[in-house]
Length: 127
Figure 1 (tube, rainbow, N blue to C red):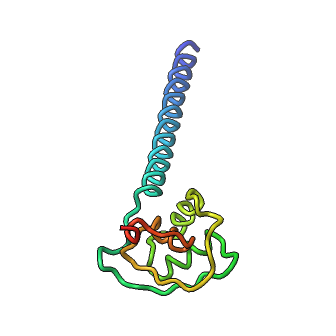
Figure 2: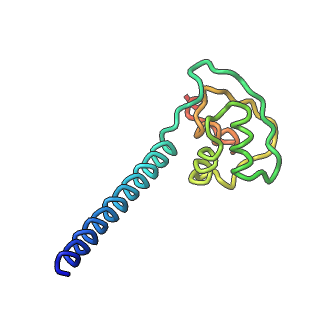
């Protein structure tokens, strides 16, 4: 009787340790994924190096960030449309996009494209 209680106690302790290790592992993986997403949001490079390729894009009035991200991904201007929509949402230009036809380049970063789509001058154009 005493040995079965002891075995049950050891099994319970081992199971508790395994659950804690699993929780720790899941927490670390979730933290790593969140860090990687945050890092990419603010440092995502352009699709191509200079000179890149010019691509014409038509932006409809009232297009959502998700739709715009998907459109730019289809055109090969960004690698990840969802990531672009997050970048747009976090930018100061989220509600300032202007409809129309634009010529964007695969060597431009998402930030540069967002500025162009909002009708703002990029830093390169100001130099």
